[in-house]
Length: 123
Ligand SMILES: [Ca+2]
Ligand SMILES: [Ca+2]
Image 1 (cartoon, rainbow, N blue to C red):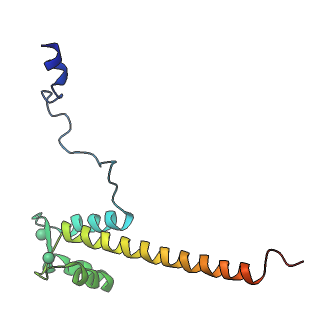
Image 2: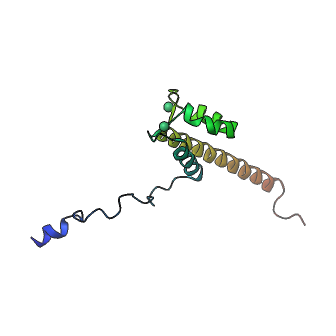
Image 3: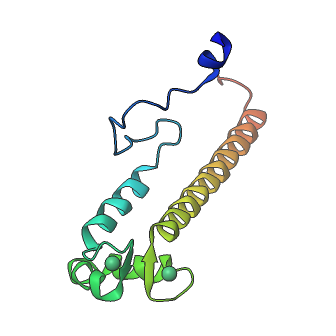
């Protein structure tokens, strides 16, 4: 009896927090946060996706956004969903990561080369 009470998850409480705060487990990247911010701003009819019409305002503000819209509309249906934005953000992050790793590798091999060519400090 006691065990059952303990095992019961605390769910009988009245919903005190209807809007879940940000999950600390999976923090979105800065770019993703920014993208979602303008997503919410542009989704004027709140249907969870941005139509070209809704994005037109942003297109006027920045041609980069028009480009982003084209890139991020992965299924080319003329709508941008949060899922698409996340996917694109994830993809860009992975790309940056790969670039960084490539650079680091280049630097490492370059310094390794110079070390073998000129051992330590030449004095
Ligand atoms: Ca919309
Ligand atoms: Ca789409």
